[in-house]
Image 1: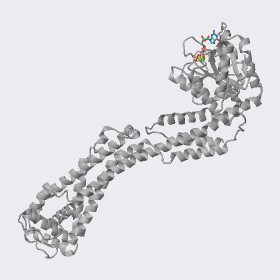
Image 2: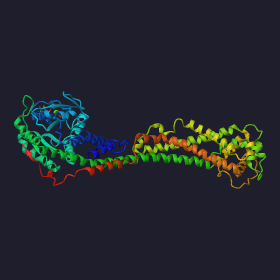
Image 3: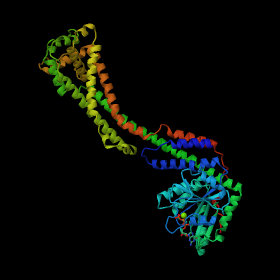
Image 4: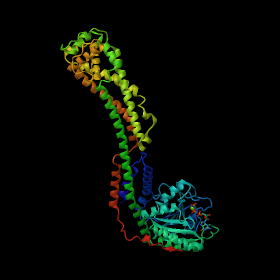
Length: 573
Ligand SMILES: Nc1nc2c(ncn2[C@@H]2O[C@H](COP(=O)(O)OP(=O)(O)OP(=O)(O)O)[C@@H](O)[C@H]2O)c(=O)[nH]1
Ligand SMILES: [Mg+2]
């Protein structure tokens, strides 16, 4: 059982709910509360079943909790006051024999033990009271419905560490909502409870007691003993008259004296707390799975946007869209004014050879064409990346978890995108020339391919990549109208008719798309790293459920007889 709980603690502690989803806050709190309860109570209690029974005194502010604790131990161990709330730092009173156990700090290890009164919520003042029998300790907690946040949180934490809740309410406050919420929790957890109805005006005793008893029965808490204390004046020490607290004191004295009875209270609360873990874990498992699903959904949206971007680049290469404007003009200039076009004849030799032959000795190929290709491609990449960023941003904006991860700059491509796109195109162009040089074919070609020829062929290959087949009319017959456009077309047709150029173009195209993929991957990573950094694990729900099943198997199932809670409490006056 202990092992199962230790394992469960690790799993709960390492499961995060970082994405902003409905209920994620609740899950984070629940997980933190469970880890706290395991550390504060379940693990130390399981390790020492015979440790003293801890009664945590809880209730609304001013109900008289501190006064009651002081009265039960016959000493002013906890400050009482008129300023609400008075108790801010918990005070634990035990018999001298039990001091060592509580001082040792296994229980509620997060609270620093002190001997002096204080008002820090992270300390626990320990007081030994000779009037208190061994085996029993009272913890005076801050108010449960406090205006002070830390008080409320601390009170809940302390109640989760109790073997027995002693709930203190008053004739004026017993119907308040907050105590009943906590009592419901206690009932769900199977925590052992006793109640004190304090400061009851004698005339109203029957009515108020009956009503409270009714409420308790309706909440299934009828089995809890209910102590009714009439309104009274406190003595000079601020203590209640002994005769009024006598029934409570003797009830606790009997409990302290009877190790069987104490063990049974402890078992009840312990079993209840462990049993309550099972649905809580399922709760967390569902939330953890939602986190994983949301992270995945966010990633999918980004993948979809950047896949579409890649597709759009591919499409632009295929439909000849890039072979327009400046690029086309430069290409026409490049081929139309040189010997290239003039030497071009249908069905004559290999175009590549002719290209080389025609261009040998010409001035350097048009650097402007290369620049035009570069800027055309860079523009395409920038536009495509902008669309993908916008789409991803819009998709995340529409998702609560996505919106929380967004920052404004994600709506645009990365700042360094223009630079990277330019580098990409230059790298690609260099790669194409390298390809022409190395894959250019036979020795004859290589021998002839001076730097100039390599450049010319490289440009033709780039144009072929841009043109793709879609741009080229299928028939080779072109109306013999003059003009450079027709000339350029013819050259393109010839280029596409040339197998070597086609092969080179296919490779150059793949290389370009590979570089584009890398570029877009980097762009998408700006988003994907955010979901990754949020730290949602894969399959977190299963890990939790698995740990829950192990615990369930280790659990000693308490026999569930008739629920005595529905009948009505034993009222002690
Ligand atoms: N007359 C009368 N006064 C009481 C009784 N019980 C408590 N008081 C007074 O009510 C005030 C509040 O009592 P505390 O014991 O400090 O109340 P508490 O529940 O500990 O309050 P917090 O620490 O603020 O949560 C003090 O002034 C007490 O003296 C009682 O039975 N009769
Ligand atoms: Mg108090």
